[in-house]
Amino acid sequence: MDRPAWAPPGIDLSVPSVSRIYDYYLGGSHNFEVDREAARRAMEFLPGLPKIMQANRAFMRRAVRHAVDEGIAQFLDIGSGIPTFGNVHEVAQQADPRARVVYVDHDPVAVAHSKAVLDGNDRAAIAAADLRKPQDVLRSPEVSRLLDLDRPVALLLVAVLHFLEDSDRPYEAVAELRDALAPGSLIILTHASFEGLPVPQEQAGGTVGVYRDIRNPLVMRSRDEVARFFDGCEMVDPGLVAMPHWRPDTPPEQEDPYAFSGFAGVGRKG
Image (cartoon, rainbow, N blue to C red):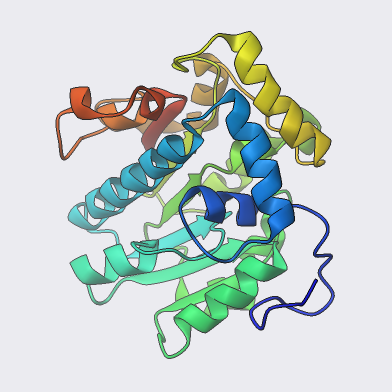
């Protein structure tokens, strides 16, 4: 396989990547056949996966606009993936040109492509770090340069926490990040769940199996389990809901049934 110019040296082109699979679902071009094959296998069980990812992106944009409306001009997006149209910095800086954004990802393709997209934007950067090591995120040069953690920050954890198993201590990681943020900060997240899916759990389990096979386990948590990530925060209205129900721009009944899979919410640190 020829290595495209955007693929950093050293990555194994034969191993699927969650970031590149997500990019494929969204119609992007930064993926390989091995990623497309894994995505197609997952879609055999959940054909609406692209609709779920589109709902994630739409929620993210609404939540970012809400944060700007609340006077927040700093954004920390962990597990940001490969940049696509309507990314956090585009939405935030359109609403407030002063907005500063730090993306964080541990996928080298996501990091390399983000650097290219952000070239020349002195108010946005990408840090190579892992959510499972919060101090690496908080101490990164990019966070130190662009974000003032003594002032409110919007922390985005969109479609990433369900890739952390309980052994990765995801609740502790989120709590450590929350504790480092100033009062008034927001936690914005989405999470996969069997709840809300328009197919039987047994069928959806086939998709979970595909992610397990590529060594990126997909952890489907219940509503109560997702709500635990907001410990120490006050939920912003309308609370923890299906993505189309969080402050929609269009009537939710117009959405595809798959868009209601999983949960989305925004919490404010007191």
